[in-house]
Length: 122
Image 1 (cartoon, helix red, strand yellow):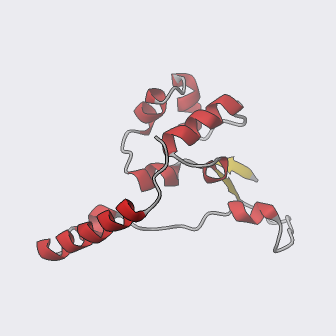
Image 2: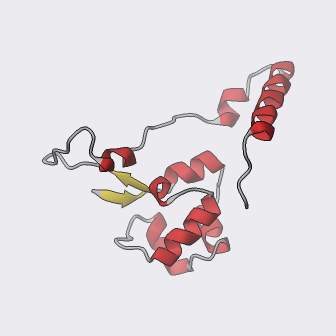
């Protein structure tokens, strides 16, 4: 089954108020509510584009493929690329007990990586 999965994007972006975030980026409140409650069965391309702009991602990042038990896809089938790997990681929890000096070193390393990476238009 192909499904819209924004939970991981909210977590990875540190978005604590998803409903407000979706509305801020042009998603109507009734559509935002249906998306967040898992009630949405279809999505207009316009909303897919708005979500991609808001999350700075591609449509592939919005969707997840969860095969049904009876589904048998070849290992090289393109839908397999939409299976999401759980990144059970929280920056705040992981750095909460880190000594301040180590935290500053980590922040400098991350900043260097960001500064060296090609920037996307926002």
